[in-house]
Length: 339
Ligand code: PLP
Ligand code: COI
Image 1 (tube, protein in one colour):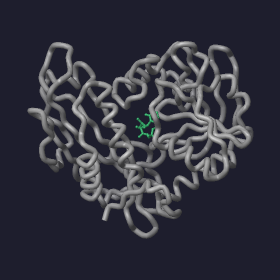
Image 2 (tube, helix red, strand yellow; image 1 turned 90 degrees about the vertical axis):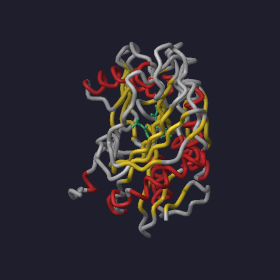
Image 3 (tube, helix red, strand yellow; image 1 turned 45 degrees about the horizontal axis):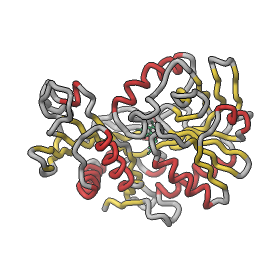
């Protein structure tokens, strides 16, 4: 293997040794297959290609100081994939099959798990796609589950340094009663243009508003959003937000350190009242928000006044990372070991 400079990893694709696959045909899931081929051989009429039958997940494996490999909240991701599959009419993979496949692919690619000191991790990307050949618009009957992995560093190049976000009203990520709460590829396709627009103006990502009234905060590019005001952890609740497992974990940790958690519709105007704010997700971990520019109303909400992450976000970030790397006890049962 070409030597990898673990400390300089960004969030990109690096070829690893193996991926794993499970096919669904004739009403049932088959045996797990191990492959070193980076290509999938699928029919040109597959429903994933024509009608967007594609759902995915994102998780990370971490190497601890003790050398042990830990995966964070694997069962929650398995359940969310099932929910996404229901959302776009695909066969659901049983939880135990999901967990076994993830454990297997991580173990097979053990040499690609970054060392503890690097602060990097092995990103795990499962996908579930419709593979049956079909032209009519209706759900397919054949599916493929594939898991690939890649060593990664921070998603946003600033890492744990605050960066700016933009509100751009001419784009919606998803429809109010659409597929926003599912992790399906179509949601990401429909957000690409907005994201590229924001990046071209120097922003990390778009802070999307609710698509109906354009008054409430929804989510932050490929991550959830939270704000800290005094002793409260405040995060938007809506039917079009992806239920983030990181955000859910941060809410638990916030309560543990004595904060009040408010999960509710959050007005854009409240941005002016936050002491701290962050984008949170598996890839983003916590990416602190420096400011949010509302480019339509010509307004700027400056959140980090000194260019540094605030004390509460820092505490939450350190606690989450400590659990993930095994430096703090796993009292909520979030960790699965790979031995
Ligand atoms: N929201 C969106 C749109 C995402 O793509 C992600 C990434 O998975 C998240 C939120 C964060 O979810 P999680 O913390 O489960 O990774
Ligand atoms: C994740 O955080 O796992 C994501 O899926 C975000 C993005 C890379 C799509």
